[in-house]
Length: 397
Image 1 (cartoon, helix red, strand yellow):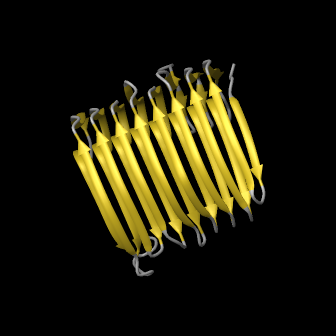
Image 2: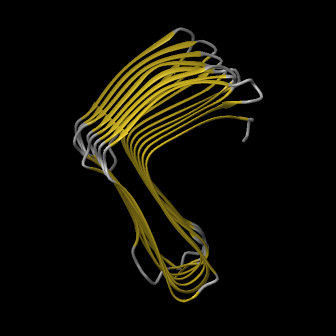
Image 3: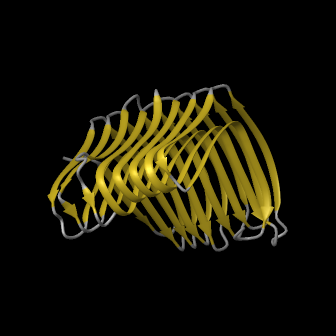
């Protein structure tokens, strides 16, 4: 059973939308698939959503004020038992989201005041292929995503301005587990967890003027992947956990953004990939407390960035195999990260104020074990407290 609160607002000239959503109960959805000797694709799309609002304005103006609060658990799960031979691809997507806000502006002005709060609850997404004798002849793509708060803004020929505030006191967890005997194709196993996420993309003579505030204070933000096969031709496991993330892109006008991020949670990301025989194998894990990326494909970019992390960031990545060819293992852990860039062909200018403080431990560990023979092995581990990158470059660079 899936229970969600949803509102859609479609606005025209000079429209005003006032939204207030409160979800107090749990939102739970789950799917179990038992398949045997499937001759075609096997797929599952599973989602649990607490509060959701979407709005669009075209050739006018929209003043959007939204408040979303979630105080119940949000859980999504997918369990698969695939006996015999699965000839087509196995594709699954499992998503658990607390609060979701989406707004679009096309040849229009969008003014937004968004406030999203998730209480001390659980936001979890899990996917599992449980029978170790599974033969996935068509390959597999299996992913789990858990996000407490999401705000997504898009526009074309738009002016976007306003304030977005997000706070999560939730534990945010994603996990994807695969056990199999044989995968003679591409196998992708993914887990992603985010406490707070803001994405803004505007093109074709657009501009942005935004204030973004994010707070993550739950016990943990975790992403775990375990991808296992007796014989895999091209097997990859990828896990990523981020407490606060803001990613912005603009084209055709100025960008002036103030970002304020704070994390108290433990951030943990773990990937384990095993295969007795393998062609190519990849194990990658990444964890970040606070992340900001702002790009303007035009001449003026102004960023006032403040990031504080006191939670630990722990990342581990591991591969173990016996006989095969190429292995890539990577682990990357970061406390605070900010990137800003503008267009050099547009006589790009940047005005940057950056303040980063990290007091939590940051660790990354990568392990590769080859018990028999292999052709190539590349293993890397990087841990960084604070990192800032600002540059002016050509479009597309």
